[in-house]
Image 1 (cartoon, rainbow, N blue to C red):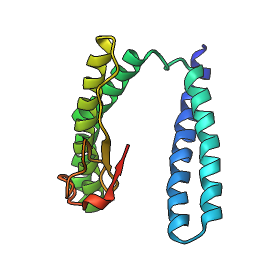
Image 2: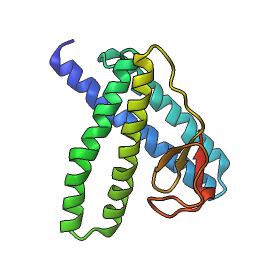
Image 3: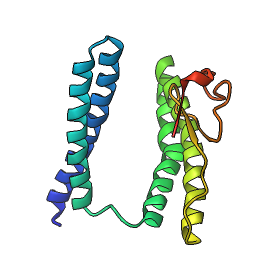
Length: 167
């Protein structure tokens, strides 16, 4: 693929990915405001944006086998933990942006766990197996992730057990 076309597809992927997530967030807000049809519309169009994301992603060739995809996920999470979030935190701290500091800290701590979970899955795949995984619990406030039962309170943000979503 020619470089400019690839760069354009990657930019489109980023934009479509942001739209997909933004519309999911908008849908949640519409639900809170008791506007279920608006929420449904946001979710429907969000799905369309995900279709666009997927098409772009497959076209620029980053979709590989599961072992390679896990390594890409590990690399991404590790970059966020080692470089991206520490740099973002330094700027937020310098500028005394308390909300940003909390959001960044929540993400940084959760990303450490995600990298470890992906590493465990990669080891299983390398051994020719699927990962032995129980229910995954995600804190809806900060993204803390754990296997098994949700804790009574989130160890990162202190949210109660009821804020966890089980996968």
